[in-house]
Image (cartoon, rainbow, N blue to C red; front, side, top):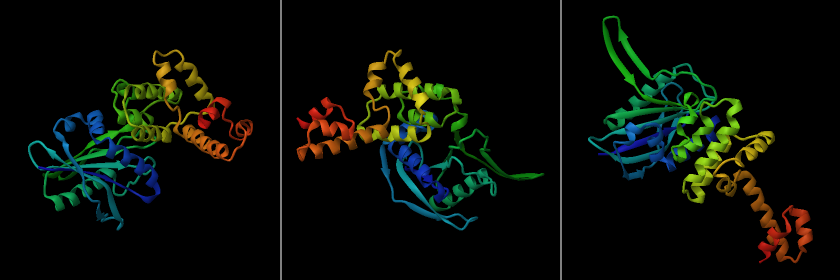
Length: 289
């Protein structure tokens, strides 16, 4: 028995946004289902997951070719099943046809190909909270022809506080898209850092999680200062301070270190390197050694 995962792109205007979500779900597929769809997670044998080739199909309304960027096969207990995960972009809102009808059309196209039971999931990543139907019906006054349902995750309507003790990397990343208030931004960031201290991730996966979070929740200078003040009062303060507070800042520091290394090789005095790179004397001495 097999199970396939589809994450479908809606429009080229949101390629970067879609790619972030697809990378997150692709690399943390099991964690994603465990955090948000535990009933689905329970029935999948994750030891059998393998990536399949991309698939192309045509949107019958818009006449555009759409590519399935992630297709994963895995064994499911009981029977062959296809799992569709559709990510709806943050600002994209199409009313004709409405989303629940489009979801049915995508479902129908895939069912026509696989002829297997299909479990559809929609992830709404809108910037604002709004309700989308999770049911599509075709009926007459005297006869109900069709009732189509799908699972959904509406991130802005999700309470971020329910996930801060989960130690789940996908939940940590998606805190940045959940339903926090503006005045809670610093607290959300602090809880994100607390979560990161508890997870043992390799550098590549850590960077993916940090990059995703910072794409959607980046503090201003005043908020950063408040964050640093709040961190001092936490039990995990020392561990948090060992984390890269910002991958962007870390990248800038690494660039400065590379410049310093080149200058050292050319024999520049440390004082000159300090002035040009803004690195302190001890950091440059370490690079020299």
